[in-house]
Length: 489
Image 1 (cartoon, one colour):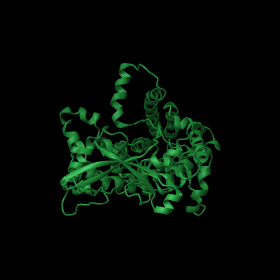
Image 2 (image 1 turned 45 degrees about the vertical axis):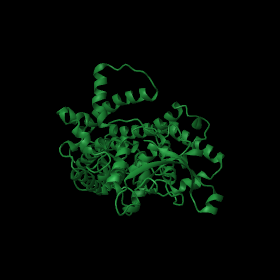
Image 3 (image 1 turned 180 degrees about the vertical axis):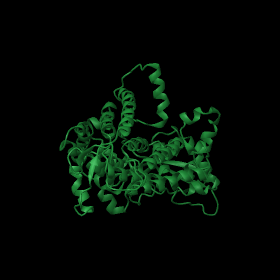
Image 4 (image 1 turned 120 degrees about the vertical axis):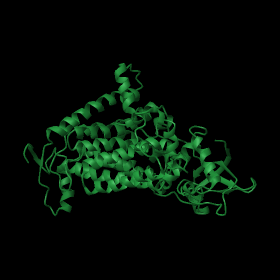
């Protein structure tokens, strides 16, 4: 291989070629989950007969000329039919499989990022989650470490060091920012370590494990809250230390992500956290794992990245450095007067989400309101609509559904917590149910009006709480609920 300088043999400390190989395939699986999940919901959410039609969003901005591509970066400007949306979701699914197989990873990663950004841009409330922007940021950074090859094979090139450092920096910000926002919020439940006494039953979509963990004593929850803060605030600094400190950070993050996965449903967020943590293991740590699949025949020698990828990674590093300054200033609430030219660049780059801020549950929700949809022909007899995943019937147990994300169910949680905030789509939901929209009805579990849509649809507020061991034994119910009144969205 002319022009390449041989570096450490695969398996040496300090070489991360195996971690990159594994990370890219994990990223392919995550993209696969994201596109598949969207593909089965896209028409009901963003299609012509959906809740927030993408074509309506773009129609109001078509007069912007070429500027619309920069302010609203999406391939939907070329065509925004239901077929185009399905092409992006199912096309992304196919590209994800190519990435998992290792076929042409560089162009495939570029297309995956472009497809997901296109859907994110037109998705608005239904694609506004932190794992969506985390996938976009990890996706474009993955382009910098992707090998330039067509057919899959064992890694023969090490990633550019700056490119790998940028992914470590993303993992650092994901974890450290998440801890800092909890402290900066001033939320009393985090300061008193009582946040997890509420979390499992008030989170958007609890998993079955959440009910069981909720039953444990307060001291256990306080201990877990302290561990979470240590992992998020202190452990991230181990990322930039040599092994075994780096390994310790990786395992701490992985254990945290698995714990979250067992008790709640956060789409592919936990999988992304695990995939990024894998990049902290050098070839020395991963060689035994790969030996299982290669019958103890290690991959061949790994060569240093050539000058081109290193220069591109350096340019990307400068971009991330600039954007990190703005993000850090916002995190620490610093009122920085950026030069006008720099502020303009921040504004122009923001729609592409090259760098983002992170931090779930800065303020812990301590109660759980739920909105139950009901329909009626005469306003006297009301029948409830059952959602596929969010709490409704108190006898139905919470379920594990991640990495799938039922995005309407999620938005119903936000709607219940902040009545009247970003709730215009709820009126569209009512209209679609009264119309009997098949696309929207597919987002729900039941249609209590099979003979024709109702004339009226309303929302009813309930307060939901987990049952105790004794209550569940006596009634078989996982939840108890109390009606609070009508939802006036």
